[in-house]
Length: 90
Image (cartoon, rainbow, N blue to C red; front, side, top):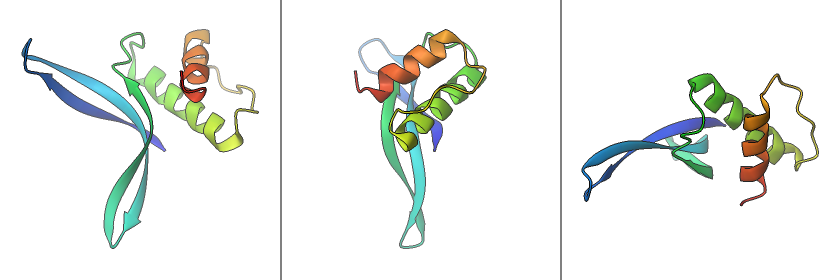
């Protein structure tokens, strides 16, 4: 699984912005497809790309292990809090 940016355009304000989604790639009839697991939204509270990758990795861990895994990374508290938030579907 990886985090994928999607560019969006607001017609009213003429603003371009990016939303992020946790996706898994797979092949179907010889073409690559993506299955979206979590819509993260804009993720404005995370400044660096590394934090966003860490969030995607942590949510992926939680989804794989059913939420019964402790954080073993050096993730900061904010990333861990967001990972639990998105895992619980809130």
